[in-house]
View 1 (cartoon, helix red, strand yellow):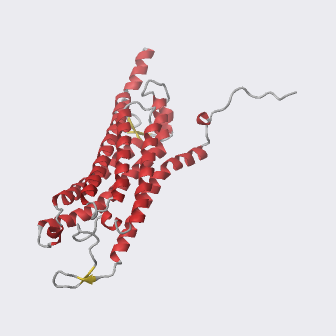
View 2 (cartoon, helix red, strand yellow):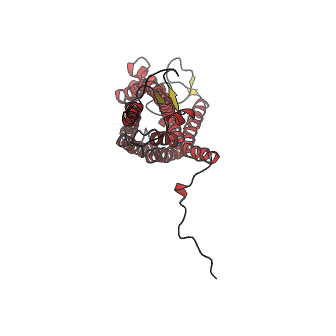
View 3 (cartoon, one colour):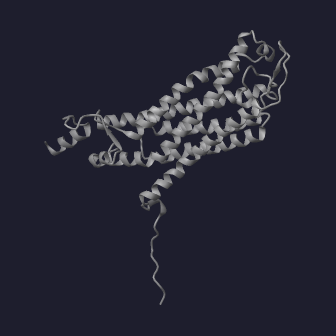
Length: 320
């Protein structure tokens, strides 16, 4: 007699994983952004070592001492990242392509995993779109030498910086929409810890990056004549010095933002779970149970008589 087979299958997507397994799945989601950060920082360290260990040559500028040779035409004191990148093009190109793929994957995955949260959906989608555009521009920059194709390199590098700026703005708008929806539902009683951490993280990144971004763009657009830049008495020379250093600082702020995306990916299941259980989108859940697990930070003393809009609505329904 033949064995009876089950007529249904169990979907992996609806399987309940153990807490140990869930932690590792979350870590795997966050890993691409962390790998991208490590790759970029290692590349920056390698570029700095490569440049500072170059054989010194006699300087054409008085007092004619020994100096490190100029890595590119647009150079004042410290080279732009792409200046060294055109000499170490294999490493630069490989890291840029890897970064583009990892960043695009992380942003698209975060947008997909946060779809159950309705507020800020379109902001997150637009943010992911500009993250992909910025990644494509990053790959193009690695193929356009700063000396061989200066105009194309200038346009593409500017596009990459601008696209990432738009990505960050819409990401912030999506986070703001979620926090405001939470406030409308829960009032001033409590906040979601994860949303607060990522909020202040991104505020810190924005505050760190705004100055370097301005100086980087001023140096790139304001001074393009190599002869004027080489004149140490010129304003352009000093402006390019600030621009070169600012670009390295801006790239560090960039990977700090990527780390915040990894943090969001690690905790996105928690945020979606809170969203569904508290009932921000019309569901019904136990706020006390969520607060007990440490996901919600109470902003009021334990003996406070303040009641959230959700609690007030429940009382009205019960006729209290």
